[in-house]
Image 1 (cartoon, rainbow, N blue to C red):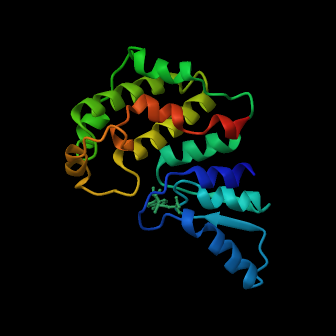
Image 2: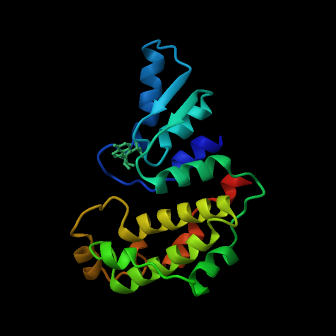
Length: 196
Ligand SMILES: C[S@@+](CC[C@H](N)C(=O)[O-])C[C@H]1O[C@@H](n2cnc3c(N)ncnc32)[C@H](O)[C@@H]1O
């Protein structure tokens, strides 16, 4: 059930093309249409949700996505074994370590979705993450996935919109997901139960 579980745990993010809510419908439609197929090209595969579910149904799948980050995350989730456990220490290292080289991607591109402080945190996380790339690729890929999931929640799943920051600024409810610290959101990504 690994692939189905992965599909179900994705934040319910509403954007054109997101297949989570349609996976079962697509599979049933293929069954109803009596379509016999063994291999699938998951073109523009994104989160990999179709890939996970089709693998669960014993199909051969070719996944394709323009974004290297998406490909890395999907590849990491599929290749992870029970030995590739991400601990709270792995996560807190990303926050506490001082990177040898600092990148400023978030500060340059993400202010529409995250505050200045959050952008600095994201840049630190990604700068530290890069240091793992050549030493432990699966850990690098799984942590990239965890960061990405946490930031979808932080940004507000279902509110992929330029007004997000305005809505967040008006919301002072400490229990709102987007008011939770990034580290807490990262620790809540249910990856460990999947890879064991
Ligand atoms: C709407 S998302 C895919 C959604 C996916 N079905 C899901 O449910 O997660 C579209 C994806 O297409 C990818 N993409 C855009 N242009 C592309 C291209 N020319 N070749 C491959 N992938 C592309 C983007 O990186 C993005 O991940």
